[in-house]
Length: 337
Ligand SMILES: Cc1cc2nc3c(=O)[nH]c(=O)nc-3n(C[C@H](O)[C@H](O)[C@H](O)COP(=O)(O)OP(=O)(O)OC[C@H]3O[C@@H](n4cnc5c(N)ncnc54)[C@H](O)[C@@H]3O)c2cc1C
Image (cartoon, rainbow, N blue to C red; front, side):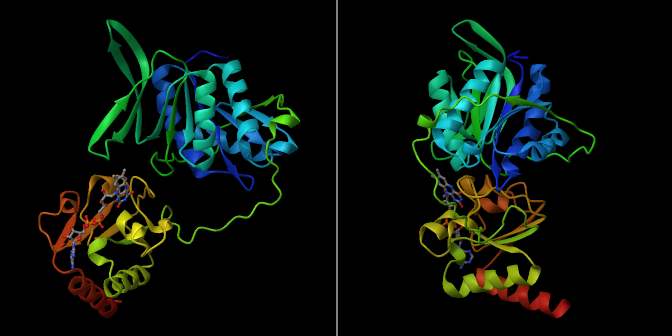
C-alpha cells in the first residue's frame, strides 16, 4: 500500500475518544492527499479502540493501522514512538501529521530522529507545492508554513530530500470538516512489537483535570488584553462575557503577568478560536494574538489607540477607554434584554 503519496495522521485518544486535533488533521489531510494523488491513512495505538476508530471513516480516512495491546492503553513515549516508526517503515506514507500537543510533541521528534527525516513544529498551514534547489526540482512536496522569528515572518519550510515529510499542527488551526455518515475506514490490525523492556516508566495512576474554560467550543468570546487587565476593567470584561453567554479570553501578557490562567489565552501559543463573535478589549492586535482569532466571524475591537493593529482586522472598531465603553455596552445590553 506504501506509495509515498498517502498522508498519515497520528491518532491521539483521550479516555477512549479520538481527540479533536486528530480529526482536524484527518480533515486537512484530505486536501493534501488529493494533491499528492494518494489517500488519507492513520496510525492508532491503544486498547479496545476498534469501535471508536470507525469515526475516522466519516472524516475521509480510508485506512487505519491499529496496534491494540493492554500495555498501550495509556501513552508512554518509547513504545508509542517505536510503534509509529514501525508502521511508517512498513506503509511508507509521503507525509505524516501529528498534533502539536503534549503527546504529539513527545512522539514526533523521536520518530523523526529515528527515521532521519524533517519535522516542522507548530505549522499554521500545509500545502503541496513545488520546490527547486541546486537545479533539482521537487514536485509535489509538503510546504510546511509557520510563523518564525517571533512571528515577524511567515516561513515556508520544505524537507524534500527525506521521506516522509512530518509536521505538527496545534489544535484548532485546521478546520474540522462536516462528517459524512456514510464514510467508512478499513481497520488494519498491526502486530504489537514492543518488548516489556521498552516500558521505562510505569503508570501508577492517571489524574486528569478538566480545563477551566473551553474557548474552542465558545461561540462568543470576550477577551482582555493588557489595556483591560486591572481588576476593575477585567471585572467588566467578565460581566460582558457572562451576560452574552460567552467565555473569557485574554492575550498572552495577561497570562504572563499572572492575572488569568493559560486556559484563557488566545493566540499562536494559546488556543486558536473561531467563534461567531470575538470582542477584543484593550488588545493591541499583534500578529501572535491575531493568529489565534482572525477567523472569528465578527470581531469588535475596543482600544483607546486608533492606530492599534487590531482595528485592521476588526469588523467594528470602538476608539475609547475600555472601562467607559464596556460600562455602556453592559448597560445597553441590560436595558434591551
Ligand atoms: C513567540 C511568541 C508567541 C506569542 N504568542 C502569543 C499568543 O499566543 N497570544 C497573545 O496574545 N500574544 C502572544 N505573544 C505576545 C504578542 O507579541 C503581544 O505582545 C501580545 O499579544 C500583546 O498583548 P496585549 O495586546 O494585551 O498588550 P499590549 O501590546 O500592551 O497592548 C495593550 C493595548 O491596550 C490598549 N489600551 C491600554 N489601555 C487602554 C484603555 N484604558 N482603554 C482601551 N485601550 C487601552 C493599548 O492602546 C494597546 O493597544 C507572543 C509573542 C511571541 C514572541
